[in-house]
Image (cartoon, rainbow, N blue to C red):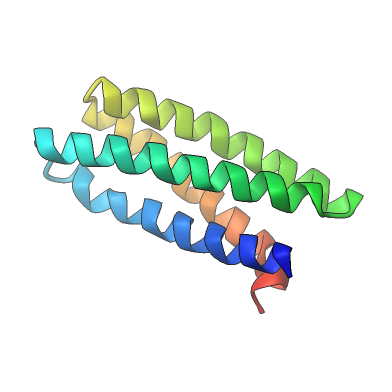
Amino acid sequence: MESKGCAHRIRNCGSELLTLEVHLTNVNENKWKLMENSLRLKSTFLYCDLNRLISNEKDERKELLTDLTNRLSRYLAKLDRAVKTRSVPLARIHYNDVAIVLREIEAALMPFLS
């Protein structure tokens, strides 16, 4: 039951992170702050829930989820740096990397979401 709740929160949090794309098209100082704060908050929730989910998993799924979580963490850190430096081109590149991994994570979580 705990894993199912974590999977739903991960999916919701990932979906909310994916909505940041709209802010990358017309960026101003207020949107940069919003993106920075939202990214930090969502990253924390994702990390906590993914960590809890991984600790409850069997070996074969644990390895897949650990790999995806590590990739996501690297890309989120790069996106965070791009947002802090206010670099639209870098933010778009790293946002796309984050989006790809989030979709892979959601696909890996499908057994929990049904």
